[in-house]
Length: 65
Image (cartoon, rainbow, N blue to C red; front, side, top):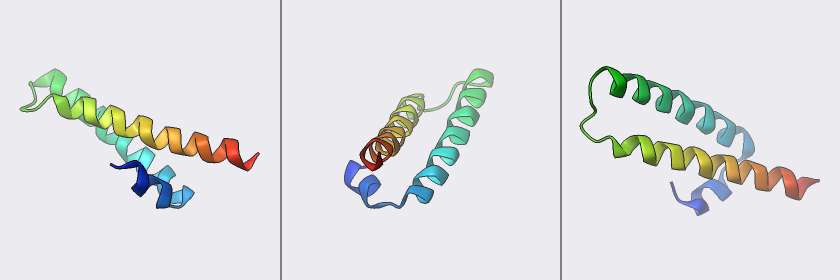
């Protein structure tokens, strides 16, 4: 997900996106442990998208103080 898309989203949607991405990551890790995924790089991309969302949330909290 692009940074511009994240900056345009309201904070509550970012929180929801973060929760869904974290759940998705957990499910992907579990399924990869049981049987190898076709594309294990998806785990890496999901981790990076979680980091992007968390960075945007952190940036907003710091600017509001």
